[in-house]
Length: 424
Image (tube, rainbow, N blue to C red; front, side, top):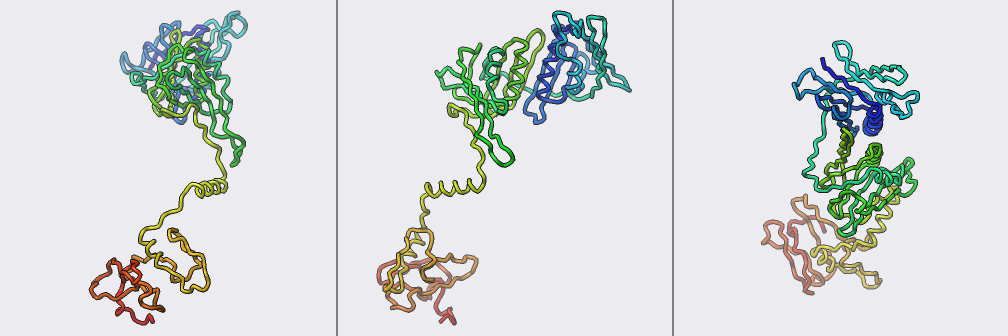
């Protein structure tokens, strides 16, 4: 049976309340990992894109602390999971009251009761008037996992007071979703915190343009700043707000560590035996524009296709025809010169359907073993146009050229005339 007992001062109990409020922004449940020297709260959001861990050092944070795991020896641990709201109902706000008014506590005693029948997380609030409030919470045994982050690979680092960051957070819109942290070009001396949302829609209709809020900060306002110029790193606004607000309650500084976009980013801060680390998924690019690109609102499909067609008609040049097709078109001529007709463009890919049938171009069916061609000038003199002629030297269909009386090249016959029966 595990042994876990510790005592909290009113100030420490109030700090746990603020911590649970922050962790509640990430997950509905909080995992607990107790070791001989430290006690850790962890939370992982549903999309597994944000991980939070808050470590309480036993001798520094607690008045008394004792943990003896049932197994694992000196490095053993006790793990469980509890609903965040259940813990918040116990660690309420204003547990610490310097004036000693009603509701303030003198100490908080926590223990674990574990046997074959019950698993209880017992919290006793001893109030100043001698009243003791006891809470028994059911927990679930789970395997706690931790996100790994190598700070040696994180060459980009900065640090700023949480109070200053909270002032900037107040400018972000309530409906913004993403935050782009952009370091200016070398020598610019500015860092831009830009919050934006992709769209605000009602059903399938886009109501208005995306909301964007940008706050420019001088690098001199940072306690430490060493970031590659021109880098965009994008994270969730909701996660960033929760981290900054909680760090401000501790009156400490927030440190950021990251290597490159699409790699994890870690925020770290702590005070008086409490160390918090938040590992977040990121996106972004290396050398983007000075402002974060804002996704355009979606356009209905019919309007989008119409706009695309108009753009294509203005920008795309007409396709060029293959040389064989151009040479074949040069051979075509009208049968009668009495009624002048506009001549088609010999370089055009398309054939006017109003032309006579003989001048139309039709692709050959290459699935057939043999093809049949005909003389387009059969009703005229033999020398007017190059014609298909019988060539006994061809044992199979081959590509060749013939030269007519006018010196123009033509296509060699595809079948012997002796093999054509019943055509005329």
